[in-house]
Image 1 (tube, rainbow, N blue to C red):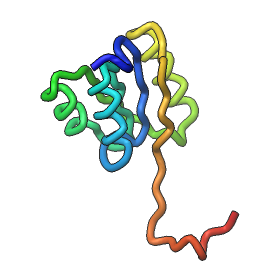
Image 2 (cartoon, helix red, strand yellow):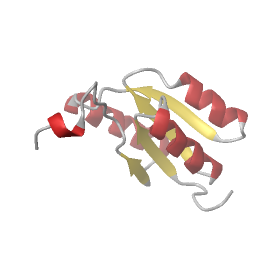
Image 3 (spheres, rainbow, N blue to C red):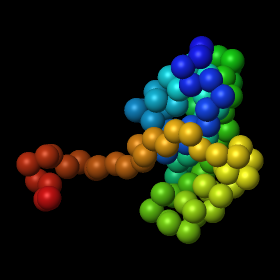
Length: 102
């Protein structure tokens, strides 16, 4: 512990995959994690707290700017600040790179 001690981290797309791994690493370093995803982040929060970390879940669709603003305001009210922001939310479905447009 220590590298991120006492820092507040908002990780979008934290319910699984890369987002979950980032959230777990930051928590292992001492950060308090706000796990945000369009799906619930209960499993991620449970894994972090079971390992002795601090985390809370937040259901958030990051494509809804009003909801995102409300979420950030709520985090600021509860924690006083956001020190780390990981914008990880996003998916592609059955798309080969060659078929994607710029």
